Length: 248
Image (cartoon, rainbow, N blue to C red):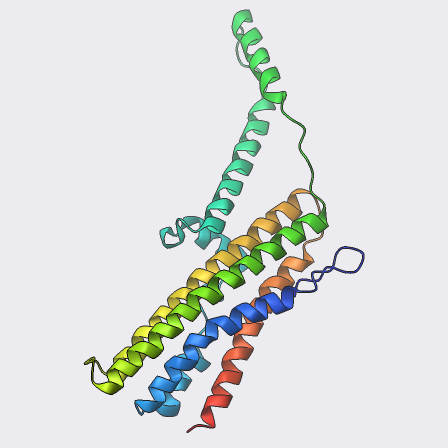
């Protein structure tokens, strides 16, 4: 839960942000389970597809999450992932530059020494860095998560409408496909969308964590954000299953 305290450090709306995002993700799952029930799959289907699964990204540690986001091509092109990659690359370049500058000059040629000094002097003449406050960094993360929630609400509403329309076609005989196959198809689509959402959320959190560490700010909020996101999804899955069991 992201808390921006009254002094300016309380992200009070972040829990609702994570909660709203997960509620939206589960809209399509509700339709899938209803379809499965009509197909006669019942409790076993729901138990195997809803109760136990945890997204691939949720099973990883923060370090493995970042490694996965940076190296796995399936996340390539996602804006938050690309921003994280750029941030990491710039930091590596900066560290390498500092390392090179700390080395003693190896050349004995006066002309080369002068050129090296001039080059070093020019490279160091940069615009002073504007240091963001802790509150600014947390606010930026909050804005990003809110934007992601709105985006995936819209995407999932479209997927929900598509599932309803296709199910009606199957029931009316307009489309020849088994209900179980239809259920599996939309479950896969829902899972893929959740995986994409996970990647963008965790990349945003990792980006903010890097910034907080860079300026020696407290990072306890990062652990809270990850844990809240994961716990909320797990609780929603369990509550959804309990509710749907009443229909059996």
